[in-house]
Length: 129
Image 1 (cartoon, helix red, strand yellow):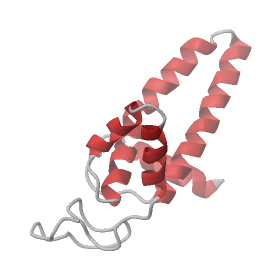
Image 2 (image 1 turned 45 degrees about the horizontal axis):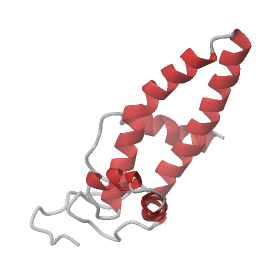
Image 3 (image 1 turned 120 degrees about the vertical axis):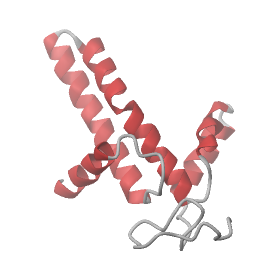
Image 4 (image 1 turned 45 degrees about the vertical axis):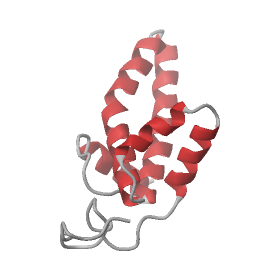
């Protein structure tokens, strides 16, 4: 559980970082912990009788970090943040978006930076894939 909270907190620390790249692990652990936290907040709110307000507050609190980590994950696969609009295409868009999020990242550096875990900047003249 400690590792899961580490990745969740790392995403929250980078709540407004839309540049760079994110590993699959970072995105999916964040998604699972956030889902569990949403259920806990919903349950606590229903016990207190204010579930709608707590759920809305949590959703707003994690909206920007979620978009940021999704953007960085798309960057890791060599795609721009415009791909966040793909799920708007009914059924096929959502499935395609999930497949893209599950794909491995570009092995080395790409136009969005060095691979997560690699040190050093990438040359701006590096060819885009």
